[in-house]
Image (cartoon, rainbow, N blue to C red):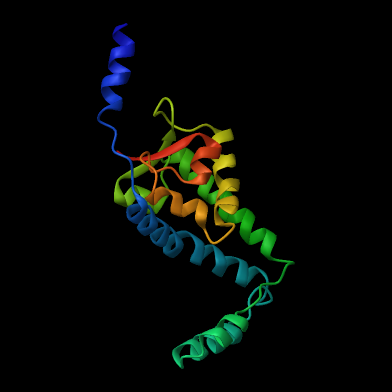
Length: 170
């Protein structure tokens, strides 16, 4: 009975991380994780993975107001190297969740982390893998799975529901 009371009492103090704080954490993670990993894959591929001249062309078109043309000319990645990039991102993200108690660098800086939705304890390996795969599902269509955070009381995205996780303030 005492243990049940303590769990219930601590649950009442839980603060769910909302859409904008999670969005900001994603941008931080992009800067400190995804961009460096992309650079590593670019170097390993000898420049074959991504053509930066296409990137420059797309940026120039967008700056000139030709948004549709810019989107159509977005650089394509080499499918030979893309799996390596995706595996690196997945591995590093899951590693951070496991080593930093549910936080990637962006989440850690902002004081939020991923926990089990029922116990509010650290997530297990299965949850981490399902959550990462759920990111892909959350993106289809039009990132609706991510937008769910803005409309749910518990601020859970589709990938949180699939992995039985929730993002909370520390």
